[in-house]
Image 1 (cartoon, rainbow, N blue to C red):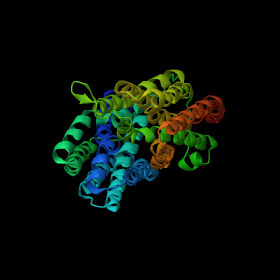
Image 2 (cartoon, rainbow, N blue to C red):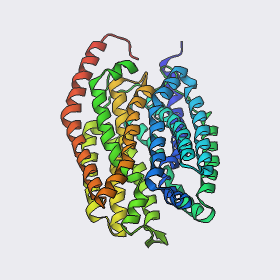
Image 3 (tube, one colour):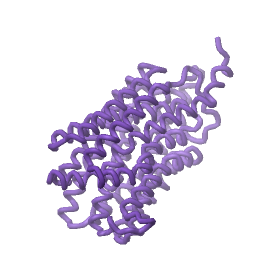
Image 4 (cartoon, one colour):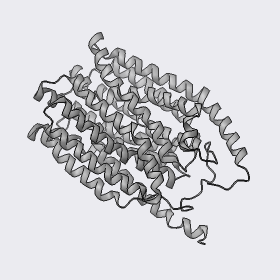
Length: 430
């Protein structure tokens, strides 16, 4: 029998390699969501499609990216050590195929098919990389998930300018094609370096500062838990508020009359905002993940979502000049992106690591539900004639989540975790 020292020694460096590979794979998937906004206008112009109809494709992408992840997570967990490499490789192929279809789509129906296929691929990569992170890093779960999710949040930052330049020079269709080949190919190659930790290989979660259960719950037990559904509702509210802006940022800038204003080194407001927004979105995930490892998930949610509620309000009342638009949009991205580190970490803290990929994926489906608010935002904007009502609704949703986190979720989690830990005394650790 191999000693625990020998089992955990390889993990000290190897697990960071796994984290970096996962981060890169996530970055390769980022444009599927965060680069989308730059294709909307050119597609609408080329085919005379309504923006609202095009954004249905975005909703389909988000839905398929999230709603199938429990199945994908279950496959990964069932395959054990080999699960991550097979799922991420398949995800890279599907993502590339989806964007290739987008490049050839001459009808909205074809665009929706491409969105569905790319969504399935992105979801497989996302669920697997996040699940791998929480398994390898029980001692730094918030930070590890935050860094992994940062790849998806900030990964598009290096391609904001190339995408817009390529669309301007060779058209949106060719841009879709080349990014499909490059990004999908990179993910497929890197996938074969991934694996889950062997039993006992990941370090013990010693001296953690947050509430953590000592037992693991099955997906069925998770779905029967009221606190899971409370977290689900909270995720939907915060995710919906953020997606309304991330999917519409180019449209909002255009409506405010600031999109093409040159403000820095020849870059327009939209280009500068795109770079800073992606940096803020990505940076928020490890930052707030690390903070949550220190002070707790719910207290961190309260800080982030209070700031988020204020940020939406500011964009509505003060974001009509180029630089105020950039600053207010960056604040929104910074206070929204952390949901993708805080919620998976909270879920795994609550329900244990054994089925972490599946359980975190069940919670992640909330993002898919929230995506269908995006087209409704266009309808509300057309009805009211401005974005102010949308920003107001987003602010209210964030403030409601703050109250739920502090006064409902934390007391419930403390009570449930104490009961689980008490019943686990004398049982072998998982």
